[in-house]
Length: 200
Image 1: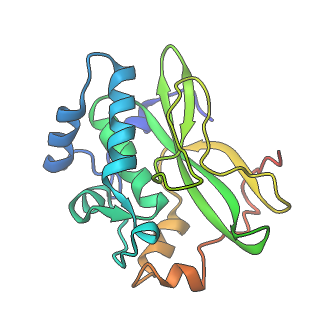
Image 2 (image 1 turned 60 degrees about the vertical axis):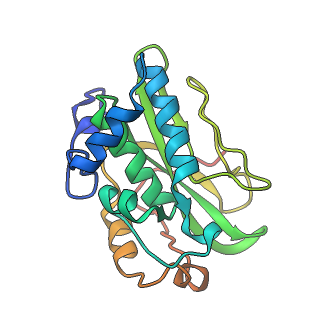
Image 3 (image 1 turned 90 degrees about the horizontal axis):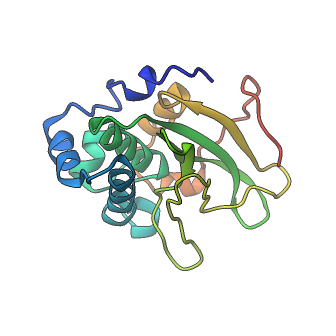
C-alpha cells in the first residue's frame, strides 16, 4: 500500500464527495479536530443510514450521494458514503474487505465492506459502519481496528489491503442487483485469487 494519501482523498464517480448534499452534510458533521470529525461522521452513517437487509428495504444503492439521498444501502454502500463524507472534510479514507460466511458456520460466503480512516496521530484504523443490532456492536476506536464480525471460521478472511477506490467487480455486482432481497438468494462473493489474503 502506497504511503501517498492523495488517492485516499480523491473524488470519483462513486465517491462523489464534491456533490453539494455530501459537502453540506460534511460541514455539519465537522468537529473541532479531525478525530472528532471522524467519530461524529462514523456514528452518523452507522446510525442514520439503514442497512437495507436489516431494515427490510429493497433499494440498492452504490454512489455515495445516492446512498445519502435514499437513506439505505448494503455495507459497501454505507462505506462509500462514510468515505465520501470523510474526504469532504479532508480526512483520508479507504476501503477494506472481509470474506465471511453469510449465515452460520457454513457456506455460502459473502464479501463484507469496511472503511479505513487515516489520522496523523493514529495511522490507519479499520471500522465498520454497517449499523448495530442485537449481537452487533460496531464502534470506532481510533488507533484500534474494530470489526462487527469476526473472520476466524474456515474460509473466512480479512484482506489486509486498504483500497483508494471500491473494487470495480463489486460495483458491477451491485449494479446487477435489482432488489436487495436478491442478495439473500445469491450473496456477493468473490474467490479473490488475484489479491493477497491474510488468514487470521
